[in-house]
Image (cartoon, rainbow, N blue to C red):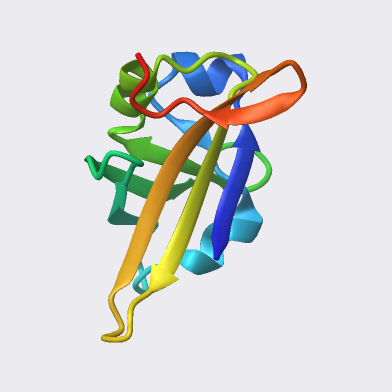
Length: 118
């Protein structure tokens, strides 16, 4: 199931966090009284990225952010403004949830994977 499909802004690339779509929060059940949850996502090369979805009550509306090793992922993949990040989840038969993250870049009108090409 696709959790997030987002084209990156300059802020997403240059800061230690990615603005996370509020509609995707249901994929990360947060324990009562907490405003964040940590998880591991695997990239196309099976490298693990320790990420965290957190909700910050800054401004008028609560804002969800993706943090943790996000900036390391951006740097490792060589991501730019305009690239796309896709986060998916899959529930195994034993109930375990596996998250996967991949990066894509648009070239001549087509999106292609850029994981591990840097």
